[in-house]
Length: 135
Image: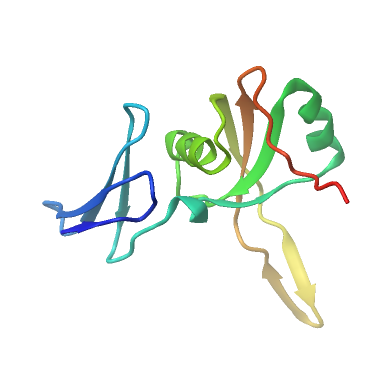
């Protein structure tokens, strides 16, 4: 069965020996993206949640490094290919870290915030991602 998840990719759904479905999203610049899921196809746009805008992140913009909050399930290769595909840039390096859990209190109830992962992406010289819109 062949479905098209993105306009640049042709995807095929295959059954793995472990009972999982393997979604092969084709090749992009001689690289392959394979997403494992239980009856769920994960789109490239779902890897990146949002761009992180803090004081440190804006200082890193001078070095052509961009900071994103990403889905913690994905590895550096998937993050790199998603950034290259979505923003049409070349990525040199991806640094990731899992941030510690934070407590959240609502009234007398104490819980934890959802887990997330931070990715600092270094772009090739001359490539730019426009995070701020000009009015």
